[in-house]
Amino acid sequence: MRVLLLGANGFIGRFVADRLLADPAVHLTALGRGDDADVRFDLASGSPGALTRFLDAVHPGVVVNCAGATRGGARDLTRHNTVAVATVCEALRRSGCGARLVQVGCASEYGPSQPGSSTAEDAVPRPGGPYGVSKLAATELVLGSGLDAVVLRVFSPVGPGTPPAPRSAASPRRCAGRCRPGTASSSSADSACSGTSSTCGTWPGPSTRPRSPPPRASSSAPAARSGSATPPPSWPGSPATPATSTSWTPRTASRSAR
Image (tube, rainbow, N blue to C red):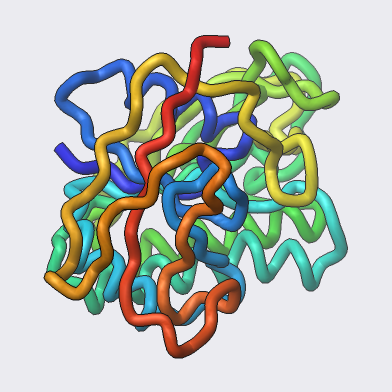
């Protein structure tokens, strides 16, 4: 199964990547803005058309979106958490890949809660700040997209490299009224979900298995680049690459165990 992971640099994304890399049945491709990505692309400023062409080339069965920002002003949060998701949804609608979208949401979408209380999955969202508002808007875009999609609202995740804020469990919401209401305990449903910087963190270290590169879109794609010092290619249409670029080549980067 081919999986496209967005936001693999982040606190949650890097653990998702490690888990996927441990599965020999998964062919993983990471798309992002940093040099750790297989292919560079800025979701906040890239065009849906460019992302559609990439999806059609890679043809993933699942797209996991862990990308986003936890810090910054309302404008930056809206760009990275809402506009970026709108780009993903539109690209998936245009693409013929038929991939399922897994969107990582956040407890902040529900807003503040009383210590020791439980928040039901179908509780009315009342985000208390621009971060929660931007994440809630992204959730509504996904749920209203008509795509095969699911949103996971993550509560207080903890583990190695945890950002300095309380975090905990995940509660899924499915599209087209297919969600199963439940409860998720949290001392604060307004805690932020992941990220150690304005772009959600960095890789803690390489992994034990190389990622399997996706097939090339056409015979015009050049041979794969070698050497870890080679920067990853940028996808045509991304602001990170000249408009004249016409092909992409993912690198096969090995990541050693933490």
